[in-house]
Length: 628
Image (cartoon, rainbow, N blue to C red; front, side, top):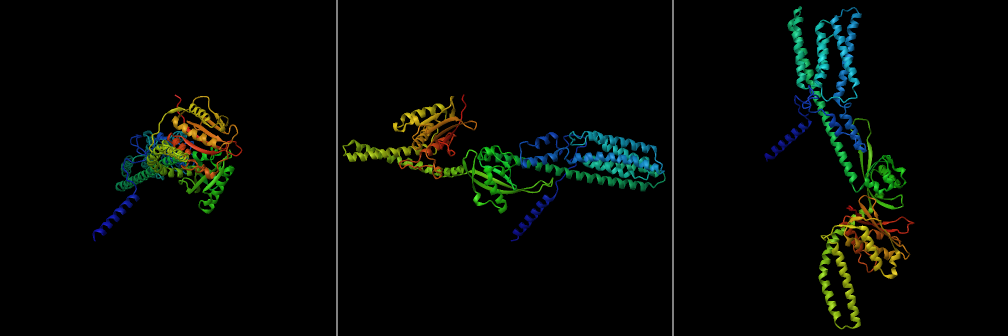
């Protein structure tokens, strides 16, 4: 019983230690500083090289939304104008120039009031002022150049080194002056702690302390108290040590914070680019709309769903500018008012420019975007719409059912083959004997239905999972022309296939990835259906073969001028065992789709706009092959 409380106490202490570690800042070393004192890139562990900054945070001109925002913030942080260290260095150079002017004016004002100022002191002030102002002017003229990420030796010499020399000279030239020149020594020590490594900063403070203690001897020799002078120099040196340590620690903390910010922004940028890549590759359309009804982002899938309107949409684009998207705009505004996506808008119908009606399934998510804190940008409500063509949704549902049904049907068809063969053989033996006319007619009926069942079994087994799919490259133009000639020749005379079928074939070859027998089977099935439902007038069936709109595709379409297929029949066209004919097996279009998918092709039905003669259009899109 005592073991469990002790274990819980140990776990609690362990959690407390972990929380303390989270609150505790990272440990630093003596080498950890903003800049290397001598400009060695190997010793500058945290300075970002300009080449790295440009490669990591280069703004993408094609980026929109969050990626552009993050890239802009990251570029601001790591650029020479935005980093903390270059700003400190510029401020230091400016402060030196102003301080030098004050040092020149102070002795001059003292001489105007009757005070006596040593000539050497005036010369030192003028020399220091000329150096500081010149450096400030030259530094300002070079603001267009990239700032270094470390203090170079010459920079240390012309800033901190000159300050130490000038301020020490002023103190020793006129020790009894009314102006306290000793306080000026704080500036180079402070800047040494910020701009150099800790060891260099401490060495600067130590050297200056020794110099002050050495200067106490002459002052004590003039009648002063040596112990008092040494004590004052020692206290001043201790203060300089403390200033160097605090400045070094603060600079290291600032360096760690900026490195963490750079790393976080880079991770955020990479994540944003990854999200954008994923969204652009999604088959589902993505539309980002703000509260004011403006489209902030749209992926290629959504552009394809909106047709020519989506392809020409420029961002940001108000939804009200597109009449076909008025229903989407109303649903978004209603969702912002109600606080949730309305159930009535989960399926929206839009009309494309060519008159085609397209039913979309719409899902919505709401989020709030806010700035990183660099500006006063207020939070912004964002609605993310996920759009999908209802035909694709229904096709996926059908595919799930068909996958299970296909496996079951293949097993059943395989089991039916043996009894069917026995029935066929028994019926053939009966036909060999002398039968009455009525009995012979019944045997013929049995034989016909046995053949029909055999064809159904063969069709089911042809598309069963695991069936071998021959691969190869064929000339689509030659194969389609041959199939059309054979279909015209084999059709019944009363169908007048030669007049009703009109073929539009390209002049050259069109190599595709397909099997010749499978393409023949698909095309014959489509021609039979079109010939069965088309009208009797010439040109009732129209076949077109051409290069597809998408690169690397070939488009084959079979259109008929029969009555438009109703929507309740259209959604079941490619399902197995669905037929509008009493003697149809319902496997024709299902087999066509299965054969097309095996070769990386697709088949779909499209209803042409009203006013078109051939409204029922079946389209097969095949993969084009290299002509070589």
